[in-house]
Image 1 (cartoon, rainbow, N blue to C red):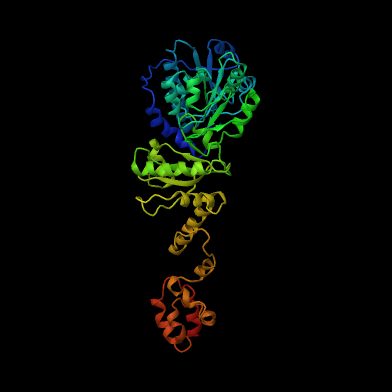
Image 2 (cartoon, one colour):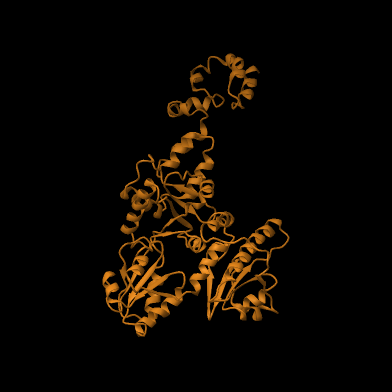
Length: 469
């Protein structure tokens, strides 16, 4: 996972100022160095000290002041995380730095292949962290890492907590007991996806009845979906569960969150994302979000449709990057590599699109009838021509008028082109079609009017000289 993607480069910095302030209450950094500089001589001894080891495998900083400043910010976030983790009673968690240039041999021995990535070593597992490099987000993720891969639901309160989770993929199974071989297969599958996907289980027939679960059955919930998919073929082996999850881990609707934003951003279809902004606490935002959810439910079987809900905590950044107004809901298509975008046109802020209207627009997006790159190219060509702006708004408009625009300085004269083709050949030097009929009779007048012609008529002077001769 690369940290220096074009779009997310600035997002990292802004994230530390916004998401980083949103979660846990963090102390101020006390100035003590806790993050280890790993190298070939010390990495084994350092890693043996901890139950969990976090390694930031970073690119060589070099002499660039910008790179040095960015690395200082990242190192400070790691130091603050290490300070908080020092107080954990159950697990010893260490954090270390590994330089891509000077410590390649160590990285190879540890199996690290991609620089500017964070790897977490726990027991025999290596977990890649795909979230923002902010202290609170990393610490919360590590708390999840050290938890059991399967959470048990024993009572109504825990059941309610499970039901309140709507932004993440989750699975739940009903088994006879923790000694059940079918539960062990389920637990082994959970370890493969921990902590990125949430696994739950119950041994209570009462809880299972509330979830409409049969013995040894597992339900798979997409984010924001009320009804689960029953995984077929119970009882399951670990392999069967893993294969099903891998085939269904690209939800139709999901939320970009601090702990998964890089993973989501890299998971683009044809280099594009469909992104939606809506504030659930706002009436318009709530209404729009319900429409988007309905569209997702109607199209949950479409493997090509995946909509991302973006956190509005970064409103100034989103608005500046995409040149949009987030005081009202928005949905658009964004290019991953350069953040070029095109947005659904909502005529009236008080009138949300219908499910059918939004589905039609999304269908055009998936069929490449709406493309941010094409819209950007049109904008570049149309800086001095207002007429072409209409063409950008309506995909599929006739392109025939484009050739006419290049020959005419005055758009009001377009209708005269077909009637005066012969006159145009004789009067290439005249921009005003109203003078066409007078050219042959009033050559001397042309000399008098040269000073009044438009500045663009550069060729008139040469022709007037010929007339004087």
